[in-house]
Picture (tube, rainbow, N blue to C red):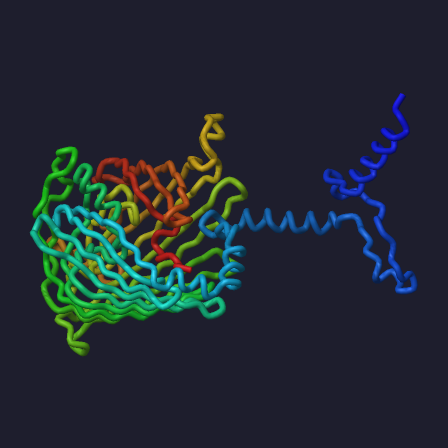
Length: 467
């Protein structure tokens, strides 16, 4: 038989456990205290009520319907930890600024392409764009033509409520890709170095440029100007680590001349319907002292619609025209992971482009579906895609012009279908995918089926919002 002391201890422990009620969420409890002034009425008495299950079901259904309507690319990023970082920054503004305002950073850099060969260099900078601005420079030695390349820049960004202002000034000597709609060359560097599978065309830029942007939650506006001497580059390097013959051994020569160009760019995304649009316009002419006379514009519309909890449907369309003097570095290019995956990258060009593409990206983790053990950070998704596109007008590669003024002729269209395996690493872009694609052409007299490895965003025809 238990002693009275032991029984009293057990009773007190039970009362304390019932008061804490760690596992009894939602159960009705007895108040631990009563109000001191009963005449104050029930308004001052803290009373518990049963949870509003109707409201919970409504909010849960609303969340489910949102997930069904909006797709993967429209999902909001995980902001866990940002509130605490903001609270610390507001509580320690001086310490926060002193530590970062004059911070010096540096890193090595390497690039490789058939025009420059290996480019050994590095970056160094001081400051923070969101404080007093960042001042930096990039320098590299191109072993192919035995030339030094480099650029100095200043960048500044500030936030006013929900609007970001950004300014960038830069100048120097750089190598640029001719396909200005998809200018990123980081993956092209890996392809060229590993097995020579680089289809991009390159040219030299010497001069300065400025870019001012204003970005809100639902829209963005950009104003840019550049004054540069543009010149052609020749192939200097044909080796690669695997010793393969490069996919492209020549480099398309750019038109030589002083380029002065004004650029206007506007983009928007609708809050109720998951659509994103963009309008770009560049103009160059003798009125601003340029050697080239042209007007270039491009329109893009992309969507991201959720198909329940199964997949995301991503339709995209783009249309572009170049009027005036058609030069290679301002032309439109078709082919590659950013347009048609069954066509070799940037292998077709013209003064006009029209493209429609549809991607269906599955949400289910294939490895989990197959009961294959793997870390949660490495899900593997599946996707299907189809597309049709064409270029027309003056051929930058020197071939005969393709018929068409505002629209291509029927025989110039190319179409495709295929499937992809996708991995979303979350860095450097939360919406980016590493994709292994199998694309096969539709219709007679087309290229062979192709396997390609690419990195791109879900909405890769629209330039992503930075903030």
